[in-house]
Length: 285
Image (tube, rainbow, N blue to C red):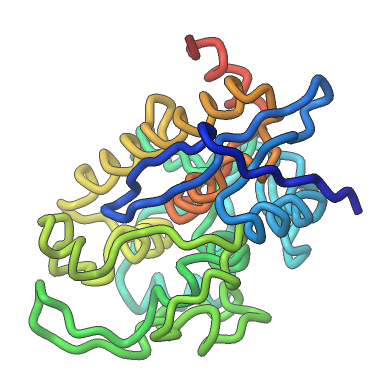
């Protein structure tokens, strides 16, 4: 296992905000081989993210995999599992599941403007939201209390996960996350910003789970637009990550570079791939 020296020096500090939270980290620089000479978010987060690199980039499309399923990379529709089909029938979802393109994107036939490359299951299996996404809440939008909402998900999406620690915990644990860093705003922050709608009181990822399974509603255009502005081809955080890799001289899959941004993108169903990086790098000035 390769260990990189972490040097925290004055003048290397970069600061930015993601979803209302303030993050402070050291800008990474790499040698000619693409290995970091200066990195950070917190030294421990960098070291652990770097150590996980080998296990997180093994699939054809550069997206995370824990070995539970082999991704389809040809343009054919994902066939609903028995559990997925049960939910689709119960909830009256009728749109087909997406196709997986050769490059790994998910193609929704009726919604070409959203092209994530991680399914909801892959987002959860990779380690996301500090384990808290489907925790019990009282929604400021609906005025209702919710608990056990994770039970609406297909069982195989949660296979092997500790529900109380990785899905419905009331306490955010950055160690659950892929990159061992915290990101994202509070439920109250999202509600006060006006981004939350009654049909999906938990937010965008809840919408994505239901959209993936075939639900279609009047709120889809707004939620797809949000994804596009975050993780789409011209998305803010996708291009933020590409630019940081380019300017530091590091490889696109050097996880010591901007782990907070990488974790944020993962929560929106996207992981940077070499193909996307190569295209985006041409636009970096």
